[in-house]
Length: 353
Image (cartoon, rainbow, N blue to C red; front, side):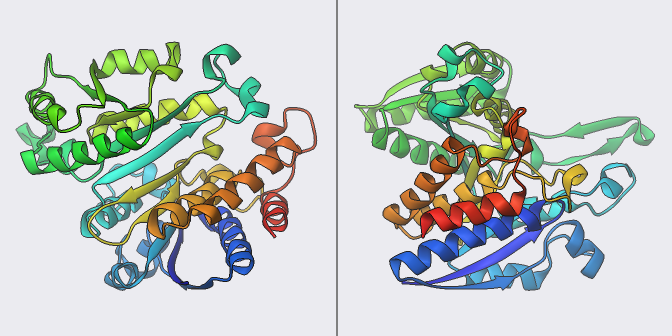
């Protein structure tokens, strides 16, 4: 199979971790006889520095022409610390989601047996936790009308959802629940928000189409608590954009490190695969960042974009072997030897081969 991949390393540690993901992809393609080609694109702060645009048209064209996008991270302190900045790196991420029609973010949360002691939660709570968070990506408050009034002293952000947007993300959630353990949790704030009441209304209307899926409903504040109290309760969790942004970062703590969690953003056009950890500028260029999330994002790419399950499994197996062998970066080393970003990438690629 010929695989055309748009490589968008972005900012901060993005280039370092994407480089390790590419090593894993190359190793899998060599092992299974695939032909892979990469084309480099710019997004985020590095794109602003080059073109003034966080998601230039040439980068969008590259993504549209590719079979999948391997993405790093966006963000830079020089923009974070300037509240008056008109153009920000994160606008590039919102633009890529909107223009590629990436309406669903899939974040699997799973634990590694040898790392359950690294979780801030008790071992008996997290050992065996395995669920999928599905976050709506292109609607809600992040994309609704926003602005200032009263001379700038009053600010507003509008959360707006249409039936079409809610139905398509819920349909995806029901489908994934049916493939997994047939349990779907719809998270909203229907006791307060009208947009959440629409979500709950539509979910109830759709329930009869999936009679073998058990559906429960949970207010977002309760969901935040239950993720900590009983993470093994969840199978598939679906929610709107802002709630999903917060809950998925909370859920990342279950595994013991944000550096372990991958994600896929899927929708109308080319799917995008990225680690969830962000640009982590404090570690940029130091060769200390954990590349596992980016490498597991590459595994998701084989599985979700190309339907190559064996290839994805080969990456996952190599990652698990590296963790069991203690070949980990400083965030997981805890007193034992800490390997560099590139050393972990090299070890996993060699294990795949």
